Image (cartoon, rainbow over all chains, first blue to last red; front, top):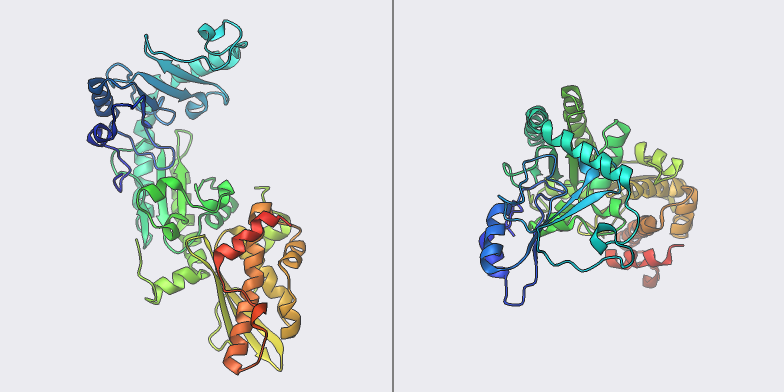
Amino acid sequence: MHENGIVTAEQVRGAIRPDTALVTVMYANNEIGTIQPIREIGAVCREMGVPFHTDAVQAVGHIPVNVKEDNIDMLSVSAHKFHGPKGIGVLYAKRGTILSNVIEGGAQERGKRAGTENMPAIVAMAAAMKEAVETMDAVNAKIIPMREKLIEGLEKIPHSKLNGDRNSRVPGTVNFCFEGIEGESLLLMLDEEGIEASSGSACTSGSLDPSHVLLALGMPHEVAHGSLRLSICENNTDEEIDHILRVVPEVVSYLRNMSPVWEALESGEKPHLI
Amino acid sequence: MALYSEKVMDHFKNPRNVGKMEDADGIGEVGNAKCGDIMKMYLKIEDGIIVDVKFNTFGCGSAIATSSMATEMIKGKSVDEALTLSNKAVVEALDGLPAHKIHCSVLAEEAVKAAIKDYYDKNGIEYDHEMFCEGDCAHCHEHDADGL
């Protein structure tokens, strides 16, 4: 994988073997927001006769997704990512796709998953999706300038790095690494300032390893520990972005001042990695 | 965030004895940046008493809080008393830590010991080498399984 997190169609072509049963690639990554070249990957899968699935949970409702034009055979969606209820989603499967039954029993969902459907959640998801798609252009016209301002502001912090591709990214996701600090302490301090963020780091997940996504991009462990993911939506305001840009540099600087890792970097004992 | 006790949050937000020490008598650094925690402990020792202590920590909220609590618990104590500081005592003083954060308290205990070992080494004081760990992160993380 490239440093920007993009999987190319040619890489997928090279990875397909005679016994490949399925190709699945995220439409957009949940941690770094990078959008994959789904249409091109789908075309390669069609050409090679391999079913293609995409996890479009981060994409649907935020960027245009068209299963036909994008050469998608199967696609997963989750309602809570576009302000719908939690606990409901969709698996789209192109007509003719062979799916095994998940829960045997009743005839619901064409026998694929027996059991009474959660009708209120389904209706609410459909309403949320309709609204998200109808307002997408207007919402993105508001979010994208905020995201750009956030990225440009955070890039001014020395030894920081935007994770994921600079351009091919979903409108609301910003993910940074700050060298010399650890993500969870950053999150806790931001929480105190009313900023709700996530890290994808060891400490929030209970695992001792940093984000596997950042490691896959080639980010060293010690840098990947210092990650921050900010998600913005149309309910955020310019004032909130200004608040984030005021607070984050202060907190990063405070934590660096008490960090022996930062001390070693600044004294030249160890080289800066970003 | 209800992950941590009020005491942990207090020591995280208002860490005691944070900083560096230019004329330290003993400095101990334990942990590994790859694992996500490094603690550096500085001791000022006069007549066998820890008269001042400072710490710098790279790590999560509980790593900072356990460092801070450990410095409070050994300040003004004799070196011998400081050597008896256990990670369990640090955890209890903080009203507990989540199970997967116990390793942070182990690191705090090891940081104190590493600083004392450095003091012994610098001053040619004899000691039992088995009392001290190698500052190896993976070793400390094994304590996770204990869960106290």
